[in-house]
Amino acid sequence: MKCELLDRDRSALVCIDFQERLFPHVQQPQRVLSRVDLLLSAAKLLGVPLLVTEQYPRGLGPTIEPIRRAFPDLRPVEKMDFSCAASAAFLERFAALHRDQIVLAGIETHICVAQTALGLVSRGENVLVVADATASRRNLDAQTALHRLDQAGIPLVTAEAVVFEWLRRAGTAEFKAIQAKVKGME
Image (cartoon, rainbow, N blue to C red; front, top):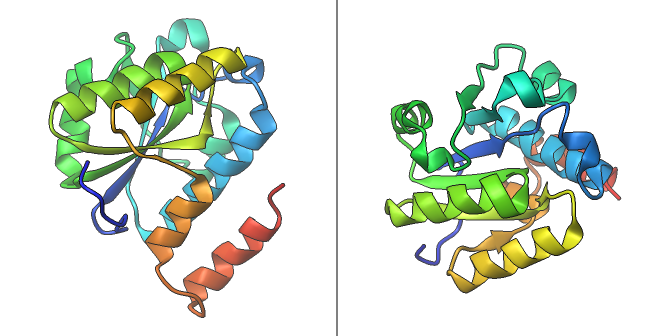
């Protein structure tokens, strides 16, 4: 990815496999949930489109309730491939957004997030991974995957960094709405 600021008018937020039967088992689920909540709130406020995926929902359950509650009209992309880049349904939905910056959050970092990031980059997409909005069941798996992505040249960012790049400036009504949420995070 070329070095550039995120732009809310060019970005899409992709939340990978935040599912009921898997999410409670990842490391630091409350930290991850607070960062995803920040991203979702900012995306909604700033008009950044959201794509949500579900890996084998019959086995792993639906998307977790906080995400479904925030986006009641959500239509997750169901997939069997670990990589979203291997899912025709995902690629079709992403193409329809006409965005060229992909901000990835999800679980598990070392499986679906890493394979998606690497797969999308190999297709020529600009991808960033939100390190504090990803998790795995084991910390070593997550940390190793983040190191691998970094070594592959895929930018790692934090949820707060993403949101403030989308905002660009203080003093706006949007900034004030998000500032309260940022102050409430651990």
